[in-house]
Image (cartoon, rainbow, N blue to C red; front, side, top):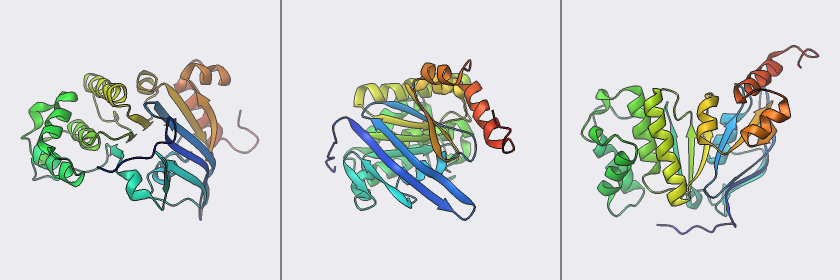
Amino acid sequence: MLTCDTDGDVALRASGLVKEYRRGRAVDGVDLTVGVGERVALLGPNGAGKTTTLLMCLGAVRPDAGEIEILGHRLPRQRTRAMAHVGFAAGYLPLPAQVRVLEYLRLFGRLYGLRRPDDAARAGLERFGISDLARAMGTELSSGQKTLVGIVKAAMHRPRLLVLDEPTASLDPAVALRVRTGLRELSHELGTALLVTSHNMVEVERLCERVVFLSHGRVVADGTAAEITDRFGREDLEDVFLHLAKTRSAPEGVAG
């Protein structure tokens, strides 16, 4: 397993990120820091720059300007070393149809370089309450179960940073609770930092301790849920989200 050069208590530091596409500037000077063991939500309306920011932080998209460090490793030059300590899961990522869950997880455990991939896979399935799915085929899983397996896969190697794109989007409330509980355990027990995107503001408030709101490719708020709602004079995060979405879509001069 690769060693990581930690920079104090920082898991992820991105500064001055800029990304331009033909349609315009998707990300416009974003600064983002996630501390070791911290649970941070990256929120904003569609088109705010969340996905582009995530992809740059994962090294999948190269920024036009700015710097990114993960546990002291600078991207893109040290991306391989950085990604050894990162996990990524999203509900839209497919699972192979004709492979059993345990076999799928065993394969990724080997790719991660784990000495005992079966043990890690079974421990992950147990953590998220889905041990009964070990022998299930991909075709037998619901969309919510596939999301859970994807989270287990992403966390098998005990990453220092876990990036989650809409982790509870297709889950019923009981299963979503199981996910939140498992993720909190990872964060508390292993010091795993979480960076989460979601459109479910209730889930965000229950899981994350800090919220970063993007709008028009820029950070417009960074703080606790209470701090942000107070700043915007809104009742809750959903009200802030709707306000920013309305602001983005309103004609020039009309936005409030």
